[in-house]
Amino acid sequence: RLLGTAGAAGAAGLVLGGAGGAAVHAAAAPDPGTALTTVGSTGVPFHGRHQAGILQPTQARGHLVAFDLAAGVGRKEAAALLRRWSEVAALLMAGRPAGGGDTGVALDAGPSSLTVTFGFGSSFFDRTGLGSRRPAELEPLPAFSSDRLDARRSNGDLWVQIGADDALVAFHALRAVQKEAGATARVRWQMNGFNRAPGATARPMTTRNLMGQIDGTGNPKPSEPDFDARIFVPADGGGPASWMAGGSYAVVRRIRMLLDDWEKLSLAKQEQVIGRRKADGAPLTGGTEATEMDLESIGPDGEPVIPADAHARISAPEQNGGAAMLRRPFSYHDGIGPDGEPDAGLLFVAWQADPLRGFVPVQRKLDRGDALSSFIRHEASGLFAVPGGPAKGEYVGQRLLE
Ligand code: HEM
Image (tube, rainbow, N blue to C red):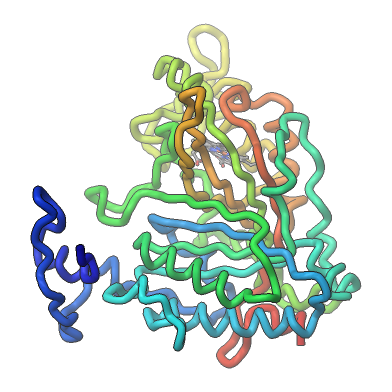
């Protein structure tokens, strides 16, 4: 059976497959004059002050992949790889093929909000003789008592985050990135994630996670005066890590959700665990999703309306000396285990100018008394320095590697 032009045939309303192995119509050549839907046609610029994939809304599909440099590879080869990766990312994000050897997987589709974001792990600096340029912010994350981390699925010399609103476009980018790594770097771990697709809701809404909660409400907003200082490394102030100007630090945690346990809780109990209503994300102290939590409010039973161990209370910046991060996660589901439990949860990706003023103090506190902690398990971890975006003609990381 020929399934070569599923995209075009699907768009024309044809049913593929069906009883008797049926009808696949001869490929109509894609009409270059036909407008794509907005989902397909939306493109994100590759060049800019920040790399793409931090400030853009989370896409419907995501791939996280970490690489280790091959034995004997040094700074020169690493620089050449970042140059190749940057060239390919710029092409794909513009909706163009990756070059001569393109696999064709994304043909017919537009860029679909593809972003490809590159970062360096702490070990990269030892491998390339760049130890003196390693930022202090890349100090390994401390151990937390609830960690159940798998070292083989943690860290890595290099990290790439891919997001797109079309699954084929995202997969295509992942293959292109892997192919360009060639003999320079090999995949250390790779994880697949997803989010709600644009257009699935009547109006743009904060997405839900696999526990069913509206997740992302409390994120810092670009309109807030301290947003840039919280999320991005300031303009070059000199020093060994001045190459990170405009960059950000990504904390990556694979967090398994113990869904069988979670789903046994009543709705009221689930809401107490978070401190917000499940239906609309409003704080338990009332209002709408946008209303601030009233952390002082006491209920008729004499207890705080937002419980002392509620996740949203413990993680709020005002409870952590202002510590804040931009959470931009993907959900994941890797099938159902022999015990019948889904291997599902959150590929938690948090962005901040300094993990010691973002993830670390908040996770320390969550680790000590978060009501959510009985229902989740941190299974893998990474911390990556994600340099600022490249200027035209530059590749990602050039200010470090040239
Ligand atoms: C808030 C879920 C892990 C930090 C929230 C909210 C939900 C949620 C539903 C309330 C809505 C919102 O503001 O987004 C989860 C789930 C997790 C998880 C299901 C694990 C599977 C973490 C981790 C951290 C974290 C590991 C950081 C160490 C925060 C922060 C807020 C928040 C900073 C916003 C608090 C505020 O400003 O009001 N989370 N979370 N979360 N979470 Fe989590």
